[in-house]
Length: 388
Image (tube, rainbow, N blue to C red; front, side):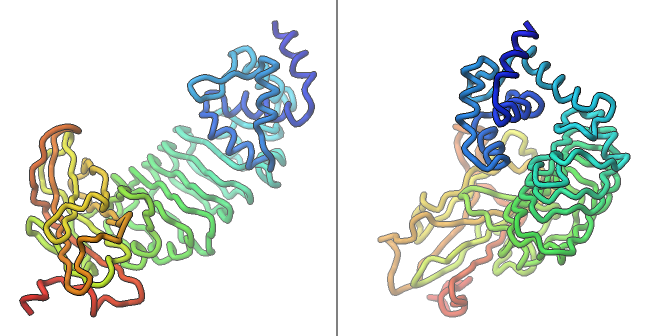
């Protein structure tokens, strides 16, 4: 059987052989769209024709929207790569073994050109390598995803060439005590995962060098200092409706336009609906393991469903939750065109997905309104204009 499989492999052209080895070593069982995206970016052309050849040769199959292969075929592919340099994993064209990766990283060995010292490596996945204690400097100029989530023994993370990285996963590295300064501009990084870390402070000032950062995950992190206004409003641009983030801490930042411990918070606007509304709340001290909080926006007393915010499950009671309230359609015919319009934000609790809703008082709530063209003074009020 193995001999027959090897004959099928040997009959492939070099490009298809390379794609086969990538999947056998690193991508078996991954979603089809993910594999096609990553390998397409890696090789610089439409990868589907090569994948179709492998399917026709019975070296690859798909089901449930995933690419997979028989265990014997996977074993053959990995053996082919292992035989490139039987005694020196660092010289092989592909790495997947936790043992080999840890040895190479801890001894800071130079790896095969295709692993990353030229333009080959796109994803470095060392997730769950619990024995990995340090991450030495690496030169990976084309790396897009760095995944070391769950490497619980890492204490030191040396600076690396991050110029091309788009996603950086550090969540679960519970022994990591500090996050180094970001000294150079990074134009590609848009997602940073720092959940479950013990670090007490992040270098917020140097985060301004993360020019494209949109998603920052800090759940269960030890960070005690919230970022500045510009960091949140300019860098954490949650474009998708319903997205939310949370920071450790139990107070609404002082730079918010309105902070309140009342049941609701509100503001008045005229002319045009604000560009974006940054909202936040601190959950009250109670068990929310099976509950959902649903922010509702009312304009002139009527619920506006187009001001969508998905349900939020606040499992961390010592955190402040942030989300952007954005209108998918600001051309509301019910708005007053000349007078003031009242926006009120209320929170409802629901015990289950289909359960009944009831109003709930947060420990603290806040609103920060952003307008186009700096028209805040003329067009937004945080107290009833009719009573002024």
